[in-house]
Image (cartoon, rainbow, N blue to C red; front, side, top):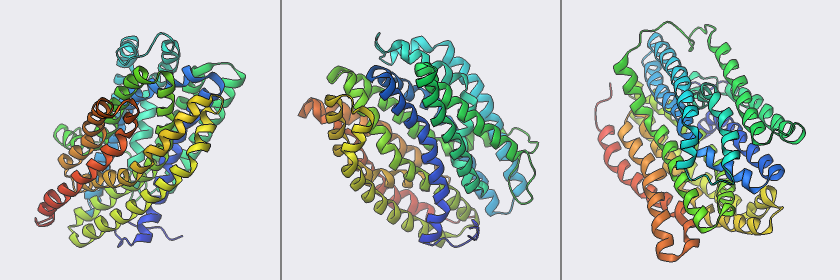
Length: 447
């Protein structure tokens, strides 16, 4: 297959083909947490599984910094590549990766020092606290490696090595799945085994990435000497902040949801929510992979000043995400029962609750993709403010409002409708922003 270049005109086919390995990469990365959840649930029980679900949102708050570094860098690098300024693109690439590695070390240490207090404030009960602690320690000890993983989720598209990134993610994913099973079942390491499997797999991926970009690639990206430009650093972080804000907001929302579910449904509610996150997460990974590619392509075309191409990408992206959302909705409805059985088939009550929750939330797939695409589209245009507004509304403001208001008005079961209501409201917001902020950008002079 002929390599697709960023300089080309993107048809529907090229847009999908260029996005495919990034989508595959995102799904492979998701397998880390899905494998943890499956083996922990089936080999260790509901309480251990609930503990993993308590730790994951805390972990993702830090993990999301990689998205900020990667997405912000991707847009900036794409703009410089579009202008033919490869030396500047390499300097930004090197500066942001170095900053990310330092941030990973510092944040990992800080979290480990305050871990018991964090877990207590997040609502971990005495029954699941030991599981939470055992799982969290090994995750945060390897934080720099996890940040490499999240950062390159966004950067593979702009490096134009998307298939190589997909291959590395497959290797890491297979290592994680195999070690999960072996360490939990045969070495009796419990949730510590699951955490070590995830962290070791991320380390393998990070080492492969470092080796790859230490080599000079004529016309491509690689590590070079750089001067740290503090002003440019903060500009890049701000532009990429929507992707971090989205994940951080989502994690905070998940923590709030877990606290409410413990009160309303006990550990069964947390387990059902965890399985919902895994299932919807597969479809979100598809949307995220496509949206990540959008940042690079839109950023490149924006750097060239090609208004017609950017306008075409907006239309094509919207059509693709709508069709994908409809397919995801149908798949979630059809597979609700088998998925529930796969994770908690040993407990009839939790299985029934989980299947019902999956059916209720299938509808949200239709709108989630559109929201992610819109946020990434604005990031590609270097309109970080619009991206942040969408991300915060989608992942924090709308769902938390729904989490507290829906059960208060309609009863405890209404809490499961929080995500569908939030995603629908966010799409309405995206339409308003596209008609206002994007129209203003489109009518301006791009230089």
